[in-house]
Amino acid sequence: MTDDASEIPQTMHELAEQKLKQAHAAYDQITAHVTNAMNVWMGAIPSNPMAAGLKDVQDRAMETAKRNAESAFTLAGKVAHAKTLQEVLTLQTQFTQDRMQERIAEANVAMRALDPSSKSRAGGETGGEL
Image 1 (cartoon, helix red, strand yellow):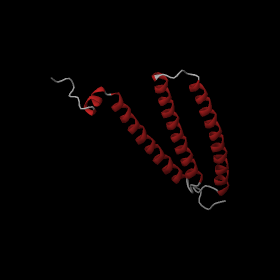
Image 2: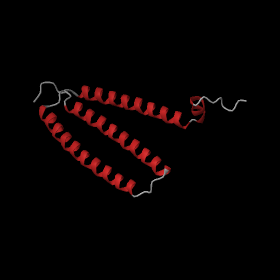
Image 3: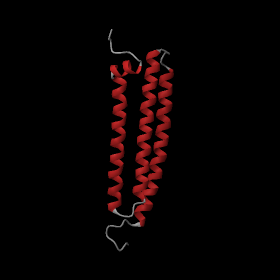
Image 4: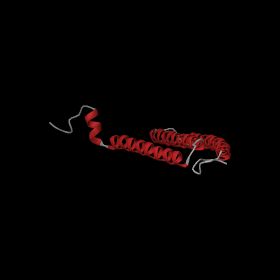
């Protein structure tokens, strides 16, 4: 047992590490199955511009999901090695702040992509002026 009531016992660290490894292995298996299923599904769709666009959206969604999962596993690994509950809370707060910044950046990119005026400026057009 520890002297400090806020310190996390070593057995908890070991259990968390073991469960994290199991979860990561299961995640890797699920990701492989989903990727294979999506590839089969996309292979069954006739090739056309819409299918290409769908493939692009699918690839972006999978990449985002993988980044999110890896971020979560990284956090879980840090939490598994945290010495105190205060350290766990600090890690969680930083994780949440980082994820929010990523979502804001992604939203800004999406908004620029959807804004027709940004395309005309990027293409050198003047917005319909004569």
